View 1 (tube, helix red, strand yellow):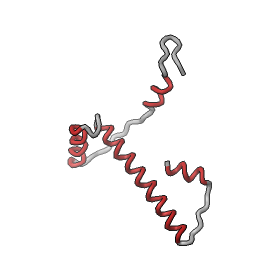
View 2: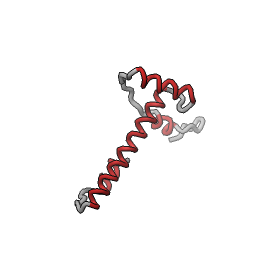
View 3: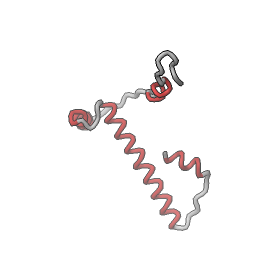
View 4: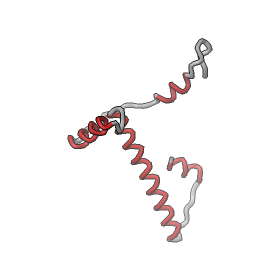
Length: 91
């Protein structure tokens, strides 16, 4: 979607910021870790550090699920289901 007056792409801006906010109690060591990550430049904000960590955690879970399925296949267990749904859960 373009703004005809100046050509801005508003659909990209809107979809890029579709986030919710949650409050999570952290231990002091975790808070200090987040602050160090921002100071080092690993991320520009505390929120970005947490988003990166959650993304990595989600990736690890997906890999573990694939490895479990692979082992089950090796063990002779059948894998049943809609492949599109299974792949969607992994992404």
